Length: 565
Image 1 (cartoon, helix red, strand yellow):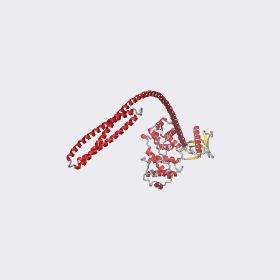
Image 2 (tube, helix red, strand yellow):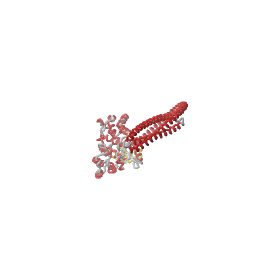
Image 3 (cartoon, one colour):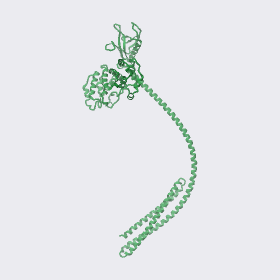
Image 4 (cartoon, helix red, strand yellow):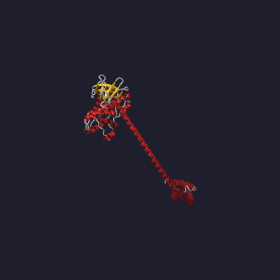
C-alpha cells in the first residue's frame, strides 16, 4: 500500500499535466500514451486489448463515466511487483510530463539544474501530506480513492528538508528567508506546493551564494538519504574475511541492509550485510594500526570496520543501531518513521494549541460570566432604587386616588341631579308622545271616512251621466280636502321628525351621562330600561303612522283611478 501511494503521487502530477483545461478530464489518446509509458516504466507486460476495451464506449471523456482510476488500479497498480522496477524511472517520467507545464522559474532565475529540481520534486512528494478526495465517480462505483486532490507540505517538513540541505552544504538555514517564504500571500492562500517550493529554492539567497556543484551535491546527498532510504553512507575501512587485509569501501546503510561498494558511484557492490534482530554493533579497541574501530556481529560473521575519526564512528554505530531497531519494529524506512513522528508531534502541538484555546475560551467565558453577574448586581441595585421610587410614586398615586374618589362622589351627586332633570324631561316627552298618538288615531278615523266616501263615489259613478256636474263639483271639493289632508299629513311628519331629532339629542345626552357614571351608579340602568321602553312605544307609534301613511297612499291611488278612468 505504501508503494501504491508513492506511485499515485507521481502519477497524479502526470495526469494533471495532461489536463490542460483543468476540467478533470484527459483525452483517451493521451491516457493511452500515459498508460503505455507506465507499463514500460513499471516493467509490466503491455495489455493493449484491455486498454482499448476500457475506453471503447466512453464518448464523453475518460473520467466522466468509467474513469481512469479503475483501469489504473486493475491493469497497472495491481500488477506492480516491488523490486522488479526502478521507482526513480517512474518519477523521472512523471516529472518530465509535469515540469514542462508547471516548472517555470520566475524572472528567468534558474539556480537549480533540471536534475536537482527533479530530486527536490521527489523529496517533496515523499514528505508531502496525502489528501485523497472522493469524487462522485468513486462514490457511485465503490472504487478506491482517486489521485490526491493536491499535495502540500507542512511548514515543519519544509524546514526539515531545507535544514538537511543546509547541513549537507555545511551552512546554517536563515530563519528570515524561511519566514519570508511562509508569509507570502500565495503560500498563505493555497499552502506550500511543490512549484512554490521550487521557486523558493531558485530564489533562495543562500543557494545563489553557493557554488552550483555544492548545491547539487547537497541535494543529491539528501535525495539518496531520504528517497533512496539510506540512513547513512560514506567511506570506511573494512577488514577482509579471507586475506584479512584492510580495504577502503563505500558503505551504504539501509534499514535492513548494509551494502559496501568499491567507490561512491556504487557500480560494483562488494558485499551486503543483512541486518536483523540477531545483529548488534560494538566498539573495538585500537589494533593493527587502526583507530576508531567497531564491528557488526551477525549470527554467522563479524564484520570489523574503522572510521576516519571518533565522531564518524559514533555516527555509524548509532545509525546501525537505528537500522537494527527499525528491523525489529518491522519498519522499512527511517524517514517515513520520522515523517510519521513529525506528523504526530505536529498533531500533538495542534491538540495542545486547541486545548489551550479552549482553556482560554473557558477563561473568557468565566470572565464574561463574572462581568455578567456584576452587571446583574448593578441591575438589582438599580431595580431596588427604582422600587423605592415606585413606592413613592405609588403613595402619590394613592393620595391622588383619594382625591379622585372625592371628585367622583361630587360628580355622582351632580349626575343624580342631572338624572332627575332627565326624568322630568322624559315625562314631558311621554305626554307629548301621548298627544301624538291621539292625533294619529284621529287621522286614522279621517282616513276611514275618506275610504267610505270613496266607496260612495264608486257607487255614484254608475249614475255618472246623470249626476256628472254634481260629481265634478264633489270631486273638486274632494281634491281640496285631499290637499288639506296631505298638507296636514306633511305637517304631522315634520313634527314627528322634529320630535325624533329632539329625542335623538336627548338620547345622546343620556348616553354621555351614562358613560360618565356607569361604574358609580347602577340606578342609571333603570333609566336606560325606561328609555328603552319609551323607544319601543315610539317605534310602535311610528309603525302605526307608517301604516296610516300607507292607507292614505292607497286611498289616493284609488281616487286617481276614479278621477282618470
